[in-house]
Length: 346
Image 1 (tube, rainbow, N blue to C red):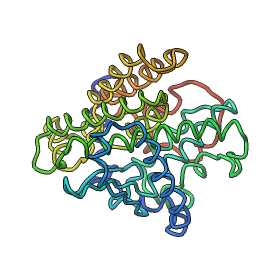
Image 2: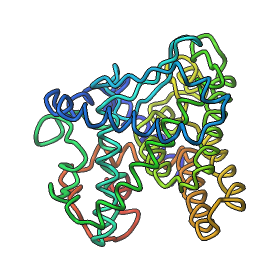
Image 3: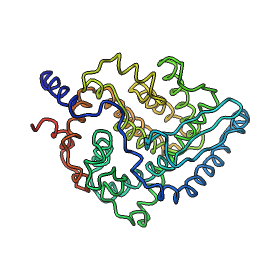
Image 4: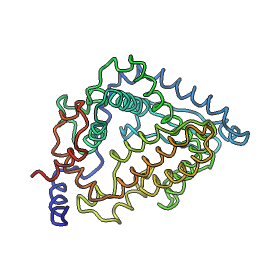
């Protein structure tokens, strides 16, 4: 890509992209659908905590004894990938919104069905990118479609035993990583993000990540779902490339991370997880799982590269703005850069 093209793309994006955070994500699932799923997913969170509790030390169990779990229908911002810990040291709370839990579950089903049926996984990343850069009115239904609808996944996909088993491995390990990460904040008594420096926020996230990975290693569970979760985060959350695409500076980006992002997702953070996991692979409980753990580490390192590549992020923004949502239907693997060609066609 030439620098001239990037300047032109930045000017074009500044005209078409919303200045603030995307809105309308709350339309992904109806309130009725979320209310119906709430009891099941709430029980899943409590069941997962009971299972994780068997892996905690006495000190950790003591720290978590007062934790209350909140499972509201949605995150206040509508973000379908938000989970967080808050409250006081004496009354900590972990919030796991139904919409976020269901979104991760549906992405897990989509990945499993597409993979096992020989379809491209690129459409999942493209879908999440479109959620970030398009408005609800850009979609045929005039609202953001949920993953399984947008990606053309059959309603009975989980009826296939292979799809069900693989999707549960993705979902359960994603849930386990997310929940133990939030519990890590409770254990380490992190005060939240207001009034602390960006360096402190990053350090807190890194410490909670390490705790989550350590607990998963105790169980011997391969954190496959962490790749799915962070890949989705990388495509939907603001990033430096997006800021540069609309003419904003590095200082603007750092200010936004400090002031508005409760879970700053940076390339350094993902790279640190990848390195930690690669080191841990040598002592993973089941020797047969060690190559897979290293593979997961490699996948995470590649996500870090995506976050670092500002030029790629700019191209993705242009491609998403031009893309037809109908292209998300299942397709056979093809040129990996087919989606990105949208940013240089015109």
